[in-house]
Each structure stands twice: as structure tokens, then as C-alpha cells.
Image (tube, rainbow, N blue to C red):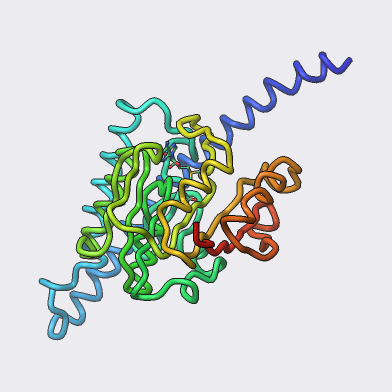
Length: 275
Ligand SMILES: C[S@@+](CC[C@H](N)C(=O)[O-])C[C@H]1O[C@@H](n2cnc3c(N)ncnc32)[C@H](O)[C@@H]1O
């Protein structure tokens, strides 16, 4: 009986995936139409207020279609050339509302929910591991004035992040690099490290023990530095995950986790203890 049920479930979950895929593709199209509407509205404002608006500097809406075109081209290149992207139906895992970039998880919303404006200051030097488009690093620099590096194995997501960095003219403070975290050797220790949903990855390009992941990060931080660590949803309630974390008590201090994303994930604020 259970085998019959399992067989019936398989085509159903395939169908669910197809429907979701179609809905996300539709959302992406609607999003594109939304940007064209923004530009049309701005054109009307420019027309009525042409005695005050300097059209040479009025670029934040008018240049959005160009940015979207570069992102679209990068997503097409990714589809052709990169076979291990496993997130959000081929679209960015991260969204960035300030530049109208389409994606799954809202950067600004997470930045506020994780209280990062209070935790990061302009003197900080931030590393974002497995940063996807690097929007969290970019937005941290935008909001707080800090310097930030982001690394991700996927060159296409990194290029999307670089286009956005250039759009915001933050290249002097934000550096996004396409490389595996396993090979990363920073020139300088960081005061803040972000490890969000990335201590192992769905695309299987990063599978290490949680303890080894945290020890590597420990080696890249200043004493007293802050690690902001977000779990996966499958970690929540998993005794092995908590046992592995407990082994790190000699290297980091932290208090209980904060539930996030409607309690499907946990956030840990961990302070580095001197080696
Ligand atoms: C679930 S996403 C998390 C993205 C981001 N940290 C966030 O929470 O918004 C995992 C990311 O890890 C990246 N990744 C996978 N293996 C990696 C590796 N070995 N080194 C660096 N990044 C990797 C993927 O390309 C993907 O962008």
C-alpha cells in the first residue's frame, strides 16, 4: 500500500513543480512589465516637470531597463553554460527591491529582520559566504557605509551582483568574487561574517561538516568578531545540527537562536573567542 501511495505521490510532486515553475516564470514577466510601467510613469513626470528635472542625472528609474537587460542576458548565459544552479527555478535566490531585481528572498526584509543595521557599522569589514548575487553585502555597504566582500561559486550570480554594485557606484567598497569558499584565502581578517543558508548547499558544491565550516570562518575573523549564521530549514529540530553547534562552544559564544522566516529557520549571533 505504501509503495502504491509513494508512486502516486511522485507524478503529483512533479506536477506541483511544473505549476510552480510556470507561476515563477509568469511573475518574472509581470515584474518586467512593472519596470516598463515605472519608466513610462517617470517619462510623464519628466514631461510635465521638465523645467526642474535634470534628465542627465535622473537615472535611477530611467536606467533600470538597461540593468534588467544585463541581468536577463546573464540568466540566459547561466542557462546555457552553468549546469549546477539549483535555486528558485533558475532565477536569483536573492531579490533586491531598491534596484527592482527579481528573486526569491527579499534582501531588505532579511536585513531588517536580522537587525543588521544595529549589528554592522561603517568601520566593519564584512565577508558574505556563498553570497549568491552578493546583495546582502551590497545592501550592508549601502545602508551602513561598511566595506564588504562576497564570494560565491556561481560566476553568473556574481556578475549580476557586480552590475548592481556598479549601478549603485559602490565598487570602491564592495567586492564580489566568483570562487569556491574552499579555495578562499582572505588578505585581511573580517570583523563580521555572514553565513546564510550556505554551510552546505543544495547544488552539492559545498558539503563539509558544520564544525569544519565554522572553524574555517573562525580563522578568517578578528577576536570578538561577529558571525551571523542562518540555518537551513532542515536544520531546525535536527539533533545532529545542534550537537555539531555545541562542539563549537570553545570557539564562539552565542545565546539561543532567533526563529526566522516564520520559524522555518534559525539565526545565531556568534562572537569569536580568541584561538
Ligand atoms: C541557498 S543559497 C544562499 C545564498 C545566500 N547566502 C543567501 O542566504 O541569500 C547557496 C549559495 O551558495 C553558493 N555555493 C554553492 N557552493 C559553493 C561553494 N563551494 N563556495 C561558494 N559558494 C557556493 C550557491 O551558488 C548559492 O548561491
